Amino acid sequence: MLENKNKNLTKLEDLGEFNLIDLLTKDLKIKHKSTIKSIGDDAAVLDYKSKKVLVSTDFLVEGVHFDLSYMPLKHLGYKAVMVNLSDIYAMNGIAKHITVSIAISNRFTQEAMEELYAGITLACEKYDIDFVGGDTTSSVTGLTISVTAIGEANLKDIVYRNGAKPNDLIVVSGDLGSAFMGLKILEREKEVFKVNPKNQPDLDQYTYLIERQLKPEARKDIVRLLKDLKVNPTSMIDVSDGLSSELLHICKQSKVGCDLYENKIPLDPQLISTCEEFKLNVTTLALNGGEDYELLMTISQKDYDKIKGNPNFTVIGYIKEENAGTNLVLRDNSIVELKSRGWGSKED
Ligand code: ADP
Ligand code: MG
Image 1 (cartoon, rainbow, N blue to C red):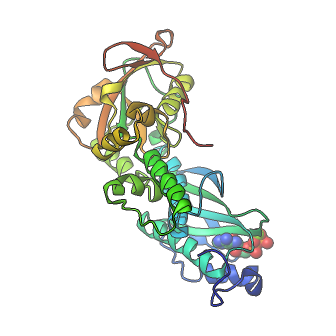
Image 2 (cartoon, helix red, strand yellow; image 1 turned 30 degrees about the vertical axis):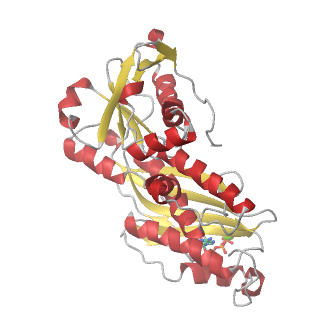
Image 3 (tube, rainbow, N blue to C red; image 1 turned 90 degrees about the horizontal axis):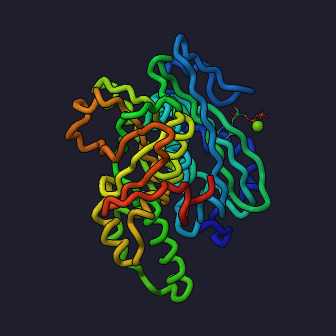
């Protein structure tokens, strides 16, 4: 798909950088009044009035963060945006703008780039984002994408990693571990395909897991929900590297300890059955897997009634004094130290 085998595909060198940018950005529509100047000048101009501005950037590098043999370019574009929006939501803010910078080698075609941008555009439509600029350069080794997300929040609503207090509840949205299991399945299929390209994999039983890997959704809905429920978390972080590593970030920055309960970690039934099939420990996976893009937060006990019974939230433990340590309470009630990375987590 990516190679220039098909004579109908357009080589990037025949198109030129400026034509490529024009082509990729011609259909973008501006949604926000706060976008005073979008693509086309030396810089975008944004108007955030009295709000505080949140800015976050991430790199996605081919061969490190993604493998195009099982990641369709449209999904990659979508995911590159999600990864960044997730960081803005983790501050309890709302993302409004992105810029996208790409480095591309000449093995990519105009059509491949249009696929990538279709994913980016879809994400922008769904999450109400104006795409206001970027940069384009050539690369000798593959594809690199860097997205910058810009968002807003009232100062009093912003939630940092360092606000957790002893006795706070540890709460997570959604479920954990499935995105990493999805990756394992895609990697296995790639190996099977190498041996026998005629083999048509039946992936139906893994749909949820694969979707969690290929098409993650950032939890803008949780930020809204917290506002509606009038819950302001004391600390928050998004789960990009795995639950244990994110919880340890909160504990370290807040100077607190924690008790995390193994039996409370939310797991999808498909993950549980697939872990049995692969003979993997589901807890290890949920703790270390990463790329779930759920929100991990701490809330004051007085807010418990507001989230109690809400299917979007699971209470998975308690914040303790720092000297209590960072503990994982296993199913048999024994206690082990929470470790940042067992195996399998990906590069930052
Ligand atoms: P400069 O030379 O100032 O870096 P460019 O020619 O790179 O300007 O960019 C011209 C305009 O096109 C700018 O508004 C920039 O934000 C936008 N742009 C460049 N590359 C991309 C891209 N990959 N996606 C979206 N917009 C881009
Ligand atoms: Mg430029």
